[in-house]
Image 1 (cartoon, helix red, strand yellow):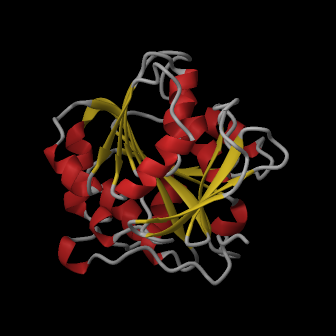
Image 2 (cartoon, one colour; image 1 turned 30 degrees about the vertical axis):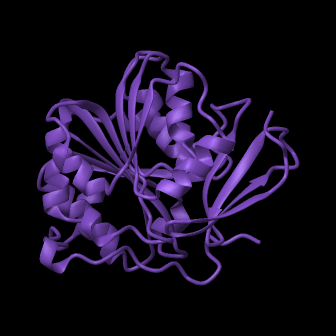
Length: 281
């Protein structure tokens, strides 16, 4: 049994800490350089503590009939929260996880091991390089949750990257990304414009206060070639402890406005969060 004492390790891209949750016996918070990265409850893998993770979970629950196995590609590993969730809610799913930080992945696997039969392959690689080498039409869902520190790396924001994601997804596949921005939303608008060049269906899930420009926060981007069940997603996300809104259709096109797709030459990371936005202890 994992001991409930904090663990601190130097990893490839900073200092990682695993901190036990005093309220849940085998639950852990992973931080890197003080920024929360993941939360895992080993006894209850369907418990998603972070708001953005719950929103991704809502999409995962609605992309196919309940319990149907999926082929899921995760860019960014963290503490493997969502791979554990998929393994629990959709047994038999085949999952690939790509994490650039080998030392971080080793820390997580040694202290928070995946359950037997999780059907999850772990890879240490740069997310875009791995994606470019991945076979076409091989994933039902692609989840991008990659942060260098607290910023999405620039090379994972471009049209060339989006083309690779679209190539790896099956025709009815869905792309999901955890992004972060604040008004005037130059980064989020540019990401939506980039994926709009390749995918017919787009949606964004975020807190109303973030969408109104009141504060910096996460936004989940959804892109697909088929209609997304935004009505069900809207009901689920509105019922969360921290309610969110689903934007799509004409309102989202208006939000994108005149934003242009991002080329490799002009790519920039997502904005630096204001001091203290995501930090703990």
